[in-house]
Length: 554
View (cartoon, rainbow, N blue to C red):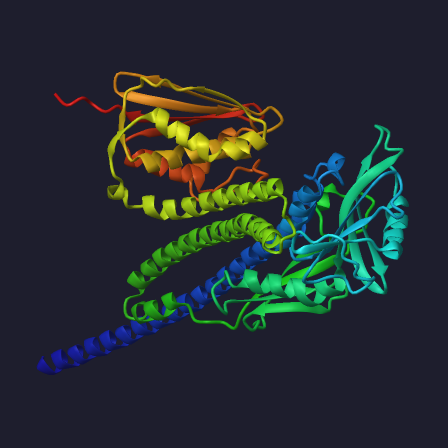
């Protein structure tokens, strides 16, 4: 009996040991398969991120390559060509500061371009062809006339179809390949007689050796260092520029880039575009931290490890999506605020250079230059104030100094800050703010920033009907001020999102950082107030700020 009992115990132990080994083998196998599945998922996720980086690279290049055409050619009033040299030079100098690819701008007025073409060249990077006869140098650019090159452009631009307003074409000047982008003005509604125009030329040899290299290096630095490899190829498949890490042997995400320095949607349908290529691939594989952390758990306890793996994958996917969205917003914000800061800086430098070099000596002209420096400095100060204010109001409401404030004084100071753009834009202002309104308990500087941002948006996003109305109303507990404009308006589905940082509406065509309404909302909340936005596209927008009225102390 004891012998049988011992034999039975041995058999049970053997069975238990064998079962335990089988269970460990099964758990190890499932752990291994889970590990391999996660590696596959991680590779797919990295490929999805590469797809996102390719889209971001394409958007950034297209936005920059059409910038000079949209901000200069399409916005410059053709009727004023050669009527205001200062305005022309400021516009071209600002374009040179923001966009590196235009080698020269040119303009002409009259039915014929022969002997009437004026070239605007960079003082630091003039074209290699033609004599350098400088006739005008108020800014970091020079004006020149080139008879041979002007005649070449004349023949090129007058040979196009009469109905085409925007012309994009390739040519050679002194054996150097160029792309010409021009906008023509017609003297009649039938487009029979050309009355002038403005355009720019792009040195495609310089673009090939320098522009794309600098652009993708700058864009690749936004992505995590060494995680992706970026490449630009020409229409023959030859690599033009590379940046980022060393590409792995996996697939490459491809995008087609039309080699055109204008909006592809705005050019004539019959124009044949040269297709270049963009390639983004993950760099040499790096083990995901989550795999290293999870692998010890996967083997001993498969069920718990599987649950943790599933939860971790969901969290990683969600975090990756949010990180990608935030990276895109930050990239757009950096590009936008960089462009916004460069414009006033370029204007201030140009004006200062002109005065310092004594090119402007007349007292009236000196005063005009000084006023323009003041205006550009105020614009630059407003951008810096917004950037600093957002970080200040993010989580520091206790930094405000609350005191009784007159809302009429706040509105007056905001209007005084924006007096120059209001006057320059010819705005009709209707301000109905009574002097006998009750006081509010607030930080005056913060409220001035609130109404300055609201009014700046009303100015920035106006249309041909330029009017702004400011009025107030009071209730038992609140004082409300409404700023209404007749601008482009906001789509209904965007009213909630434009309050977020770095977010701008789809219809926003002018500059801006996307911080204005976010700052307004944060300051209003810190003052126990509210902000309401109502808007109708193409009709206008109304922004109402409501603040608690100061109660008299008994």
